[in-house]
Length: 126
Image (cartoon, rainbow, N blue to C red):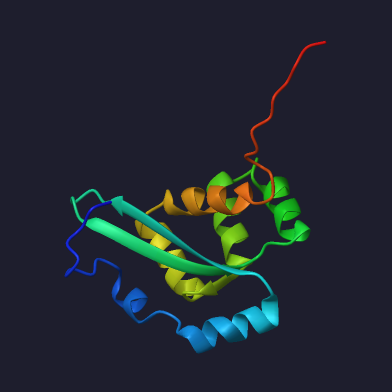
């Protein structure tokens, strides 16, 4: 998404995100750590740039997601991300999800791709 390089459109708390020391500490504690950025234009025409940091989901996180997703898909995806969220705070992430309800689905879909949920599968009738 093209945007003015001089304009930082991230929410205020995202502008002072975790530093290299914090990321190194997370890697030491959790192993795999990823950052995920979502860029989109909101209803008011503003370019939004959201970033989160997560640890790698374990099977139990996916099991819970699959169990809950048929009952309340939106809430299930938020809970899935919260279960591995490192930054921002869970309260801040919930606020972002209230303001931008589709963001949890976009981020969750990206997270699940690494576990094969969105693999290209070729079926061949024999």
